[in-house]
Image 1 (tube, rainbow, N blue to C red):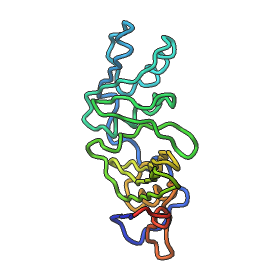
Image 2: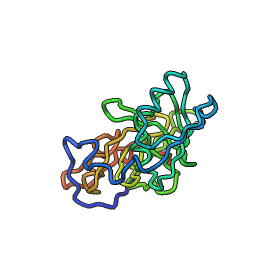
Image 3: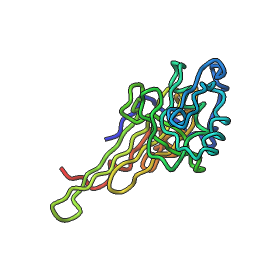
Image 4: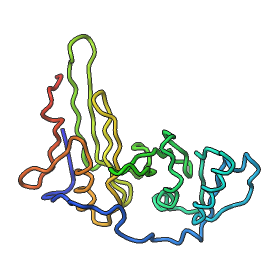
Length: 205
């Protein structure tokens, strides 16, 4: 069954990926990349130096997947590190948190925390299980997720596997509406309620 914590939500037709400027100054925080240190690069970068870090990694042909910063706001760190998101990786480690690479509808890679990381909130979910014929049981799930002001839809299961980022929104209503729009199985009903199409799939009781 699906669930949500907002009422009378209306869809956002053209949500922008970022609605506000960064809240913190990235130049005030440090950035370390373990893989660069292995190659003898011991300098500590500023969190604002991600383009220089990216250029250096390309020069050294280094695949980066372990980052640390003294910034306490993981959401801000992930936003700053987005130019380093490599779609060829399944996940990376940022400040001891497991982070996966999702993408926008346009295909731009974005860092999002794994759904079981602290601070990630499930704001709506739906699921279905069914018997395709034979001894196995098929299943499909989708969740609308929020981490701070970042919203995305994550579908897992036998039918579809997809994580799509809706964007960053200060207004929870706009964020949830945008997440519904990029999801595979959620939609808005005539009265603004959120409906999960998985609820109408054949169910295995």
